[in-house]
Image 1 (tube, protein in one colour):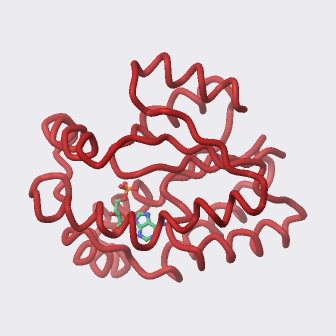
Image 2: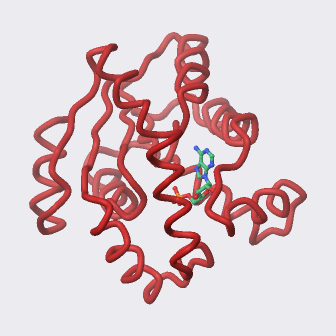
Image 3: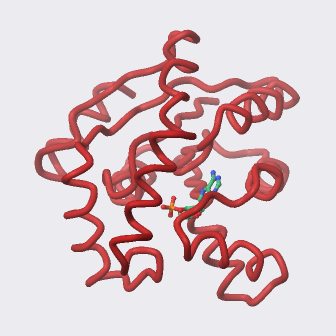
Length: 187
Ligand code: AMP
């Protein structure tokens, strides 16, 4: 099986590209953001706890997202591969992902990083807010928190995966089709 991680700052286009990649390669798309939003919609205890943090632009605890991912791995043993989107977001999550995949006799095939500058993150998120109406896309303060969180907690993953020889970066500025083409080449 092949397992790819879609990496990049908020608003880089991971979700958009994931939808296209799933159609082409038949991966199972696992977005921790989508899984958390679905828990919030269902009104579960997990959803309520996560909402407070998500709405402020902070990360939810590693154990919560790792538990959700592990659940999905167990429920879907026969897939062609996983396309992880928004996970891992901390070095601890990355280490635990390695452990979880190892237990299944698998490992991360590659990390595809879609890079855009901070200024564009804000622009993209403001645009998405009008389309998707996500609560965490609405205020500049929350968006700023998410950018800061990305730099502080998520960016260290770049060297983690570079060291593992699994990191591939592509320029996230361009049309959806251009970027999709570049990702397909990497895959
Ligand atoms: P996303 O849809 O990937 O932008 O995620 C929306 C929000 O969900 C993030 O700002 C975090 O609060 C939370 N979240 C999603 N994935 C993770 C993760 N892997 N670790 C911690 N929090 C996460």
